[in-house]
Image 1 (tube, rainbow, N blue to C red):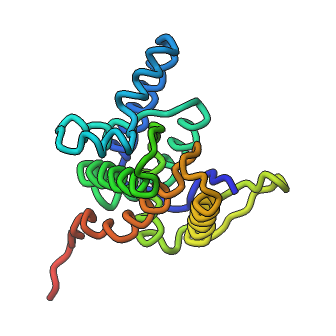
Image 2 (tube, rainbow, N blue to C red; image 1 turned 120 degrees about the vertical axis):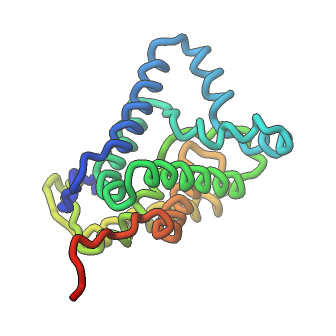
Image 3 (cartoon, one colour; image 1 turned 90 degrees about the vertical axis):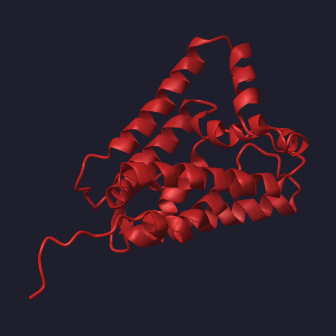
Length: 224
């Protein structure tokens, strides 16, 4: 199922979501304008490589890729898929958190996702890049914050539109990530193109941490 939009309108313009999408788009545009060799160097230097971090754990510079890898993407489909999901779910979550708290939440869940990817394959020398872990965190927050929302989706196999409860959509998404992560582990293929465990633990981080970032509600009335 491919999500198209949700049914929960945001009350305010999602400034932070706009900015995050813009930064990702600009960085990818820059990647398309430089030679492939420089793109490779960029991914190597700013993507997260588990084994490199382990060997340089006491070097402060080794921690930079925990953040920078979140803003790099391998191709246009990778970028569009991530940014589309962020656009659908991010505006509502930002609405409840506010731009600053949302940004911190987004980065934190992205870092947590990267940490668990590292723990799943600590000897990997393959750079991991992409915002999927951070966006999974946003989806995890949305899962509990908007329980009554619905998501309009398209089913590719039988091309038709269907509106499903957001929680059902996200449970299906999570189970796909979980089954893929487990099957890749059993097959001994942890070092593959998709960081399934980053998605899984990014989502769980969003589920368990989102309450720390929600703005306190403001009452516009007095009790009598």
